[in-house]
Length: 323
Image (cartoon, rainbow, N blue to C red; front, top):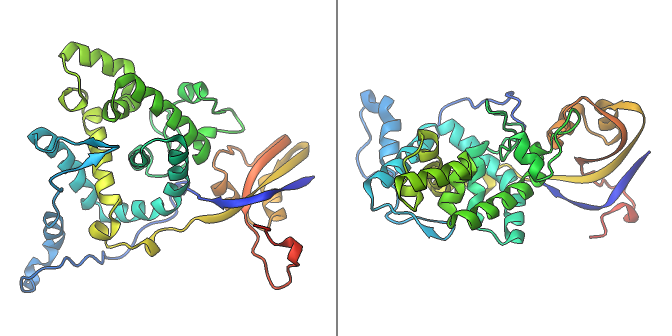
């Protein structure tokens, strides 16, 4: 038996990273210049000229905190990540496009939690906005939770479901974790570093090195460049038109879905059967519900997302969403 939930809303899907989409063709970047057109033999080095045309601004803030760009080491670390993003044009364009689907629900949750909107840029560094992202450390999902931390925040992870892959559920858990880290560490830079490597390790190093801020802390390369990469991501992906030539209309748009309840009375029901019932197909159902690990649903009650039906001329007035 299937019971539709009356409340309908927009669901913003994060691509599941199946590896079937590739970026092909030449970049369309044409930096503005007052100089004459370059001779033919220099055309091959256009990308170098493009990169060097950009500079970090003199001042940057993140989550309400000033980034000490006047310190040579800090500027160099952030510039390194800044130019790494820009050097990979194809990846950066796709990443910017994904923010159109990935960011809106996260922005809503951040606002409701009263946390800085800038924290959303962590997603670009953690998982590239890919719900099915999985690391060698066995961290999973858009916020890259390991199983034990996910369990701490009540994210179910078993043979049937991995809620670390659900954007809304994992975001709720991540924001609780980040709030706790910020309250414990005293600022957002240390909180983000602790998210990456663990608060106990950060506390230990701060004590050993007799420093009290992230930018003076010596750590393994990953953690030393983790926060700079997030800051560089904010600078670029908050201004995709400036750095990547993309307008808001170029970004991937949110997908309209609704939540339905599926009652499975038999031992199990294949997702193909469920998909057909709601006018979709297996792959799309998996993309919309990345937390479902198997090809079927076990016996019981399940809430899943399906594409919102498009009302045609044959729809009756009562079939339309009252909102």
